[in-house]
Image (tube, rainbow, N blue to C red; front, top):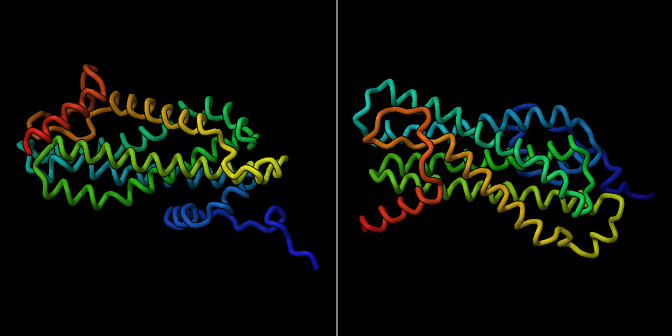
Length: 259
């Protein structure tokens, strides 16, 4: 009796709960990609992934906004609490706006890896990648909270959050690239990709990295502040002056000078 192939095997449905969905997303990548390839339950999957992204990113955003509260700034309690709420909203907005901007170029370029996804399949895949990014951010919330509680350096805390976002974004992007390879292997021309495990062109991967990096950093700069300065009054947005990279370099200089 022939055993069923991975393509014909029954795929478990994506859980509806946030925590169960996040666990499924982390531990059942191939099953999720098979559901995506089959165009199965994409509406439910995308809805749960959206909720995971919002909740997980908001959790990390709240920790970012709590820096003023934890570091004992001169602000009154109301602005401190307002900063937590505002940043908890900004963090998922940052991820979702980045997703909306990169969908068209990534959708066009997915043909180069042989995946040939439809537009809604591509959106679901990008939602999975963004949900992974948000989940990694949430997993780092305790680390960020610890350093915000024990450090009094605004510039150090800001650099820490930049590194955490870079790490989470890299994990999410790696998830997307691996998933595209899985889908490409199971698509119309499996022999071609099976013979070349790294069928995603290297230039395309680095192109996505650069695209995500520049879009994400520019949006973060527009939406700032995420970590309020202890010496400044509460602001929802700051005036557009300078750029993200100048700010990071200034913070690096401030941290090294203190040493």
